[in-house]
Image (cartoon, rainbow, N blue to C red; front, side, top):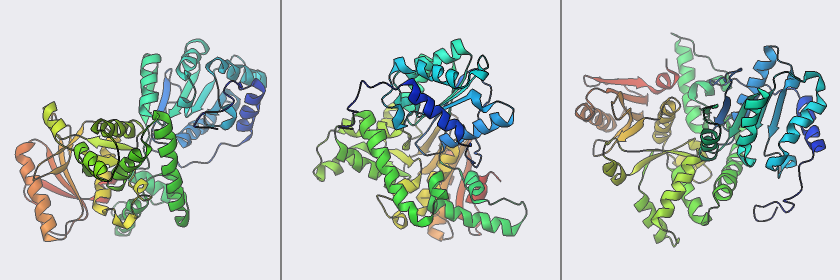
Length: 438
């Protein structure tokens, strides 16, 4: 490789090479995976697309889907799995896609004429992949599952080229219930011992984060894996994919967003800070690069709960990383506020379900508003409210919210709730119960 380009650009992927790749995949047993909350439809007539940051578990969901198909009686030879980040496939040209069909037909003639199931991982690496997929669905009657690590490149192509032939699912790092499943911890109702274990597991979750590979890795290896992971996201998903011209600025922006979960983000302030440190950039660059981070599922932004577009633009956004552990390569874990991690966990709890989220700005800020147009819930999040000053501050914000979003349920989510009685109309809930939906 040289400068992000492959030197032998014109060397085609030969059919014999594809046979080796397909046969190799068939020879290996499907990996054992811990099932996730998301289960894909097995016999949809639409292209099933999974989008999310790399290594959040998309491939494992594909494998789980293949195992479910096999358990339902589908012959494994009818399943075709290809990872388009496999170096043996690079560079693949659009005209070569037909070799996939021919190679598979020559390897397994005994399943000719039977419906096939295609699983294409990191499909955005293949040029004009969507035209090939459309042909599979339209003329071959195939069931197709694709994954990608960019909402922009994948969802845009799916929406424009497949024209109603697709259904998309977002994949996130582990939720708290999924984290418990990975840890082998079950919730037993009305058991104090079980509740104590789950409350302790929440501290583990807030320390470890929800990236499956990190959760399963030896603790001593986690910092190295996280560093390599962040470097991969930086170079491959940001700099290379978007042809970022100012890598140092993108790196600093990545540090700002990942190292300060649940922080307010002012593009003007970030621009001034970077200029004061000697970086050459424009304010538009900050907005553009933040957009890249959002499109790649690295961060999510919350606008202020205002109907006026002008007021939304005038207020800073709140930025949540897709996983707070991604900030550890930039900022030591102990220096990232655990209450902000919990706030991000609560935000992600809602973001997995819906997008209509915002926050209330001002002296009495409220961390999260569900459906700002017709507010359903106003939530504040704190790790501990056993301190009187913290309790008073959180209650004051939620009491003020009664006039700003009068019909919304007002809730304080905390890990250490204390024993104080909240004002009328305000609920105080244990964080582990809230995230578990118990």
